[in-house]
Every structure is written in structure tokens, then in C-alpha cells.
Length: 457
Ligand SMILES: [Zn+2]
Image (tube, rainbow, N blue to C red):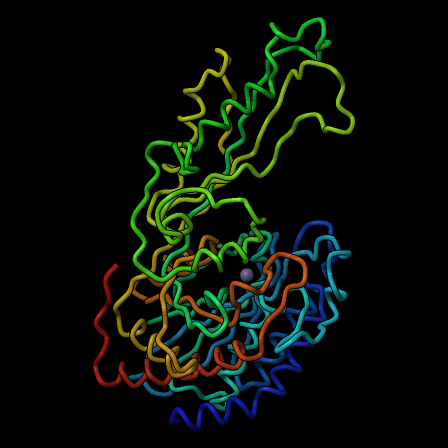
């Protein structure tokens, strides 16, 4: 299929894809505890049916304990010389959060300028539909073998993350397209090359058996909240750069946001400067970040005039894609354990960790993807790391260690992912379908011509 034929075909498919995106996004498939399981099943069944209708001959359901069912589909390679591409997405969504902050009901897809608003319509249902669009564009017979994996509990964390290495034959492939993200900004085709790792740590200060009158005891009795705050204040230097030793930080060589764009995206208030030094890419992607994500201490409204006996904070650490999660977490734990604010030792408890990921670049699939993104958007692709992590990527990469991993998709940084008023743009969805179609064509052509040399990490 020539680029012109592909573009025309995809344009002709868009009405149907939009309708299917609306159907899928009307289902509140939230796989968090406390939410009903029916919609998760319903979304699973709809995705499986859509794939079957798109010509996928084998569609199976993978059931594992304590996790939502995974849709698995397979199209054999058209001939023995063709490569196999694994396509990934997820059909579950984040909970909508405070519905009062939504401008329309979260599970009633509603038109916005150039797109649609609904929970999960970008993350990640848009990309599930993009895979479907690619399959439809080729009438269910793409020029590569296809394995498609659409999981149902990505947002909550799933036992499926560790499954692929236990069943490597099923996930064997030459390249995979992990479509659970998208572009730096609408109209800027983006190949994501790295995902920072994540770790949590809880730090607690206990100073008194119980609260004591601040008039009678304050001044000598140690305030646990002040102890904790002094500890937290050591995590960054005066510029706001992370001051914990041993966390990897490297120069960022890809593209990044402009400062204005980032301020706008982050909703930074006028007069408030950004923190940290160095390029934004380094601060956001190739360097560490520590955020205090929770604090247990008396609330202001019901505060008693008493010395606080105990206080604790939950810290979220993000670190360089290639730093070992346990090691990064250990650096933060050691830092906190070495502190004695006012002479008081702290209790430090390491929590969950998730590895980062750094893709191999420069291989044939990478080159084919860059060309495909350019074909779809008409402009050169920039490459970018993102701060979020997709735990399954490492499981899939372990199951198919020789495969190139490509991260691109129909989302963009302005989609309000995990926030109220999530939206997706039709232009991005359409171009992603074209990019996927162009990718499988370019990759298959190169593969047949003998372009199978690996890239470099
Ligand atoms: Zn997602």
C-alpha cells in the first residue's frame, strides 16, 4: 500500500473508528478494588469482538488469578520471511476522580474542539482503536505477523506484568509497539525512548507517647512534625535539585518542552518559578525527582494547641531509566536513615518499586518507526523520554529479549491523563493509525531486504 493509498484508506475508516472509540469509552472499565467488575468484562469482550471483526483469526482470553482478563490475538505472518510485531494497549481506565470537576459525565464521550472528552478515551482506548484501525486498513492482513495484547488492569497494577517471561513463546516477536502514550504536543510526532523508574518510601518521626499541651511542653518537647519537615527539607538543595547522593543524573539530548509550554501544562501559577537546574529534559527524564505525595499530621481545621507526637510522609522517587530500582530506593532510604533532625532518628520503610525502561535505538524497527511517524504527521519525529512507567514493558522485553521496543501512540501531553476532562484529538488518532500502518509496511519491506541488524542501547 503506497503512502497515498494508506492515508486515503485511513481517512475512510475514521467514522467507524470514532464510533467504536465512543462505544468503548462509554464503558466504565475501572479495574480498581471497590469498582464493579461487570464493565471490565464488558470492555474485554468488546475489544475481543472488534479484533475478531477486523479479521484477527485467533483471539483468546488469558485469565490469571487476581487480575482482569487479557485479550490476546494473533495473525500469522503472511510468509516465512515476514517479521512479527507485537501490539500492546490496555482497555482499563483510571477512576474519574471528583466528577464535579468534569465538564461532562466521564463515561459519556462528549465532543470537544477537534476530539472527544471521556475518562480513558486517550489512556488508553485511543491506542486500542489505533491498533484496530491499522488492522482494518489492511483488511486484517497486514504485511507482518501480528500478536496483539490488550490488558485490563494496567492502571491499578497487575499480576500480568510478570507473566510474559513465563510464556515466552506466546510473546516472541521481532518488534513491539507499546501504544500507551503519545506525543510531546499535538502535531509533534514523538518516539519515546525512556521511562523513568519509580520507588516509594515512607518516613516517620515519633517523639512523644501522645500529644502534650504546647503551652506547657512546647520549647523542650520535640515536635514530630518539625522533625519530619527538617528531614524532608534535606532532600533538595537551594535550587530545588535533588540532594540525595547516588541518584543517577545525565544530560538530556532529545527534545523537550519549552519552559512556557511546561508551565502551562503543569499549571504553574504566575510568579512561581520552576524548581531545579539544567534542561527540562534532564529534570524530567534523565535525572531524579522526589515528591512528597502524602503527609500524616493533624489537619489545620481541627488542630489542637499541642505538640505533635508523630508524623509521617510518603515519598515518590523517580529515577534514571537505567538505574536499578532497589539501588535507587536504597540511596533515598540511606539518606533518610542517616539524618538526626534535633537528634531524633527516623523510621524509614521502603515501599514498592518499578523499574524504568530505556529502548534500544538505531535498529531497523526504530528506523521504520521514525519514517512512519514522519509519513503520518509530515514532520520529523522528535524523541523524548517520559516520566511515567509502564510496568509490563519490562515483562514483555524479558520475554522477547531480541525484540526492538517502540513507544508511540495517539495521546499527547495536553490530554489530561489521569485528571479530570481527559480528551483525545481526532488528528492524533488518525495520524497514529497511519503511522502504525506505515510502520508495519516499512518494517516488513526492510526486513525482507535483509535489514535486520540490531540497534544499540
Ligand atoms: Zn495507560
